Structures are given as structure tokens and as C-alpha cells.
Image 1: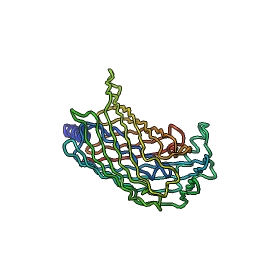
Image 2: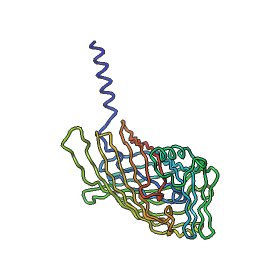
Image 3: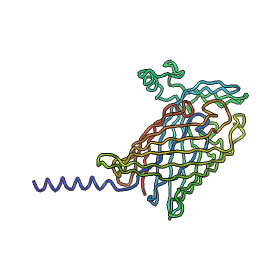
Image 4: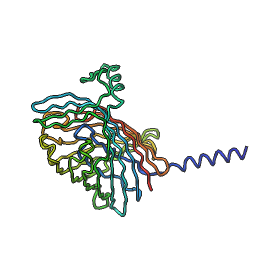
Length: 328
């Protein structure tokens, strides 16, 4: 009996040792994967957390489904399909500075989420916004303006753009975390995996209020927020779509921290238009809601969640994402 109790105690200690008291990943790096927009640089927000590991390696996967048929003035936006994004990010930290490299891989296909989305809308009596079962799971991009057409009808995949970034963590002198990132157009324009623009992005992030509730069973609430501005230099092949050289954005995050290693993260991301156009997907300010469950196990942070367009059609209808960060 004593031996059994010792074994059980050892297993409990081993299990608890897998969890350490680290700060969780408190910002979902949302990427709008709508056709054309998804091939352009995105903002890289720094972590607002004070304590971070010296080196981390993150793998993130996102799958976005979209469907839209619209014609406004001289622009036709007719898209159907699904895009997957795999992003690998290595970050090295020394003192208050961090250096990072992010590579990404994109794939476009007919997809698998059309049927579940259609059935979900049908079950709750929600509008299908043009979706029909007979046309589910197809790949078609036809974005036309003034005779210039951006098309895709066959499955395509390849290396996307490359990002280099430097971050400065909050200090006693500066309350914001700051990130300066550079996007290199290494994607293949013939495969629609990027390469349409280079960019410089400046982003800020700040931890906001932390609320401790007077109840053992209620989670702690942590807020954070950030904002960014980018300068983009586009390739001439999309000049007809009237791209904007300056793009800005902001986010707000409200996190429910159930334990030191488990949290529910909820973000709202807002981004100004990349193009001067009346079509929602190209020329409207986008608003997206993202929510993810984040938990730490030993040296790893794992998160899984979804994103939804709050301002209809300015971002993909529905996205799923997953991430794994390892402290090296």
C-alpha cells in the first residue's frame, strides 16, 4: 500500500511539473486571408508581456474559407475557395531587444468548409449570402477592375513572403512594446502566394488593466491593446486596383485567465483598407473577431481557435487556426 501511494505521489508531482508559471501568448496574430489581401504584408504586433524566454520557435496554421460575388462600378469581385497559411517564426531575445524571422507557406484549394458553413447557416436560419450546395467546394478567383484581372482556378501552393522584425520589450521608461518589421516579397505572384508588395511596419502593444475578481472560481481578466502603421510599395501588376501606400490598424484583447497556464483569449482586429475601392473586400475597413483557448505545457504554449468577420465580407467568412510555441 505504501509503495502504491508513493507511486501515485510521484506521478502527481511529475504531472504538476509539466506546468510552469509563465505568461501565456496574449495576442492572436490575425492575418486576413481574403484573395488579394492575403497576398499582401500584414502587421506584426510585439508581445506586451514583460517576461519572455530567450529564444522561441512558433508554428502556426490558419485555414480560411471565403465566398463572395459582387460588382461595384468598374470592379468585379467573384471569389470562392479556401486558403491555408503555415507560418514558422524564430525569435531570439537579448536584454530588452528581440530579433525575429518569419517564413510562410500558402496553399489555395477548393477546400472542405463550404458544406459545414452552409449547414450551420441553414440550421440556424441564417442567410447564405449566395452560397448554394451545388457550387460548394470550388476554387475560383476572378477579381477585375478596368480590364486588369487577378485570377486563380487551379490548386496552387508555394513559399510566401518573408518577414524580418526587431522588437523592444516594455521597460521602466517605455510602457509600450514596439516592433519594427520588414516584409520581403519572396512569394510567387504566378501562384498567388505573395510577392505583391514590400513593406515597413511599426507596431505598438500595451498591457492594459488586470482585474482580480473576489471569487476563487472566477478567472482573472487581463486586457491589452495595440496599433500599427505600414508603408507598402506595390508591384505595378496591381496598380489598376488603386492600392493605398499607407495602411493602419489596431487591436483590443480581453483574456480570461483561469489558471496561470490556461486562458481564453479574445481579440478584435481592425484594419484600414489596402485599396481605394467600393467593394467591401478591397476598400472597406475590416473588423474581425478572434477567440482561442491557450494553455502551457512544460516549455510549450498551445492555442487553438477561430476567427469570424464582424463587418461582413471584409474578412473571410470563417477561419480556424492552431499554434504551437516552444521555448528553446
